[in-house]
Length: 256
Image (cartoon, helix red, strand yellow):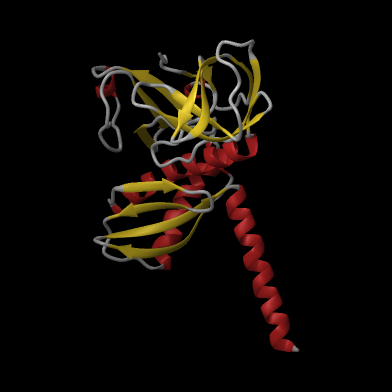
């Protein structure tokens, strides 16, 4: 019998090394996996990709949450024995921080869509390479994109605190949420003061400044919505680097 995993990342997204106690050994979709009594690993959910890392000598190649609250850490080989001594575990920080930048950036950008265009985010996805927001807009142009980017990056550069609150069904009424929570009971609120308040279980930066920069790169029509691709932090820098190289190399070829 498995027990619900204590999810330590809710209150601390920055700890990456910890001692893991295996609570059960099993399989997830045919792959060896372990559940831990408590974990800093984030399981795929809410449009955010799962963490990677290691437990003991095994690489963690996926993390998934079951309906009973168990968090399964999918391994690249045979799982350790159940109930054995505590194992050293480590979350891949590079991947984790990238996800924190993208997710906090998404909150900032979604609030900009609402404040500037009165357009809600109907869905979002934080992908391996690029992230997206869908809104029910008829059309936009680059002048609108510039307004959204300037407002969003102003919040980034103000380096505001990103606050977290735990509330119950009654307590949630104190917050002007961007959209109603999908669950009841104990609810986690992520707040960027005077900008955005959202019910969210994802990992976030401590301050908006850690997002670095928010850049929108393209958009397309998807059914009745517009889907916008955006990049934050290190992803935006990498994108700028290859675009600059491509443009300069192209210009050199035209002059030859």
